[in-house]
Image (cartoon, rainbow, N blue to C red; front, side):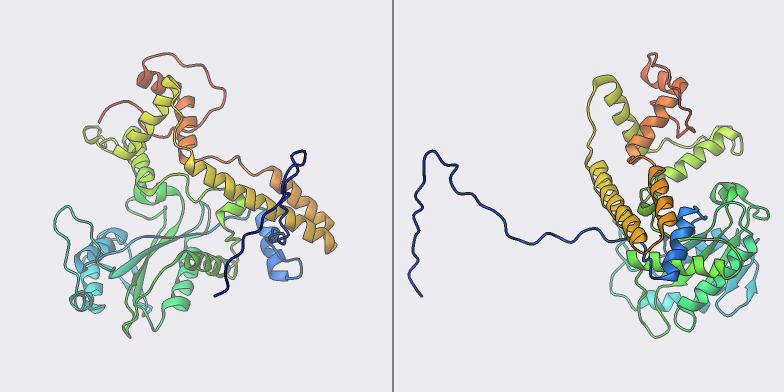
Length: 382
């Protein structure tokens, strides 16, 4: 090995010293979100600019044992009151449908093939899922039967001859429990898919999988004459979620209780998670304690990346001769909502709801012009 040599650099006391300059190449610039040379991409751009209704596809959980899977099917078919459409094209109805499907899918056999035992009380269940629970939804006003037809096509294309599945349509007009039908407004389909295929392969659902599924479901709806789009939320200036599922469900229970759809004696217990966030907001309003802004900084970074990509899209459109479309992009960018974290949304709604905020703070707060829908019970109690 050659001997290391040390270089001595003479320095002029009147000079700034070493002038280090990076000769590295500039990193890649932002790429356009849509391709002007692709008709399909341009059609997607126009749907986005026109704010065509967005489809929703999400995984809401999954049973890790036959009993949990059976209970979920009981929930979505309202204990036999709604029809269940199977992967074999049959419509089943009755209280014994859930037990029949669990037995027909041989879920008890699958669970016995695993080596991990059921968790003890209080322990986290780390067992693999036996079924995946998926929801495919469209906004209020979409014909429910079209949603079901699109969901049936989607399931057949992705799972036929591989994974057993069944689905139930929740139509706000016919659901016996309208208050549980996504706030009683939007038609959606609950899809239950066996997590292990008939050949023993496990179905893994990743982040990219959900976006692909959204695009497939949207296309199935468009093929049936329903306007539907599937652009990522960040492109439209929205966060991944405006509220975590547990908090959202708690909000619904609170509002149902207030509206009188539930017995006044069974008021929902205050959410511990939400209560903690409420206390953070109050601590900021009274004591000026700044909350942890890590989450918001990430949202801002994402927004910056999205804005750069939108500008790149505008430039690409102009270069391709689509000046009018580029002008639409400029106007669309102006309408993107401000970056807000879940904490910001909660704070805005608390400040806007002056009566309950005064009750929580015990003091009069300044008036707020903007009216915001109520978020949850802000009183300090459990």
